[in-house]
Image (cartoon, rainbow, N blue to C red):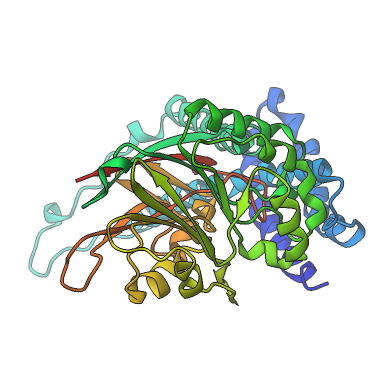
Length: 425
């Protein structure tokens, strides 16, 4: 199986990092009876943990619908054991580099002092007095504090895997659209994306997400693709929750790349049997107080797929410029590559796909994510002029997703439910 080689290499790299951390921990614990008991436990886990993922992926039907809980626990425990070790190893490497630098400094200090040509012996440089830096009590304090701080990454990663995974973040975003018809000023759209039924170990997370959406009382609900991971048989775990979605203007959806990894017709059939109106290169025109709102959905284009047909979708609604258009398109690259160059008056495009990278940080304007490596528009609201002359404005919103792909973990990037409010400016 092609997946086994990268898994084996990853486990080997993790073992090397773990061995480095163990050697440092052993030097600390061997002199302390209260910590010495951890050494045989550590050695046993250090020998066993590298085998966990290769054995699991080679001996189980991990791609099957069941048992998702087993996959979640195994991969989650593996991540909780190894990911913090990377942080600890980086800190230990800095410490060891510092120790080497001090050894090098001491070695030079021990060398015979040089007397400048023509100078006297009293011109020799006096050695620095480092006695105070060598006090045992201070060093012992720093070592204990260092290993105490080393427990923080384990708590953080463990929380992110086993609790933060479905710690939904309801984000409320205003979208200032120039010339928006007054009837749509204040219209609220709830967006969900990347549900990934195959990553859910029970129906509860999806039920909770729908409860949060309904509590917001949006005017319209949009779901931007990836209902399953790779099999239509995964869908039943989320279908009852999808069928509970309600909004005055309707509940609409589009397809994602993972839906095509499965039998996409079966996925579409199952989703359409719920309250979701699935738009596949199609659209609907909604009348609101004499104004028209066009809701358009394209099939996925991006990540090696080219199923989207924006022209066909726009012909199904025929905008005339005095209305507003919202497009559901799973992959955010579709906005830059197709929507903006097309000249179609799409006011707001809703996308997902990136999951916000699942790992990163967001502190106000300071933010970074693994998704940024591949996607310049990876999460949040983006705006660009509607025409090359700078007239008008069109927007893209990239949702961080509800489910996960790959490791079942979110570090610093919470699963998202978005409430977008259209504003006339």
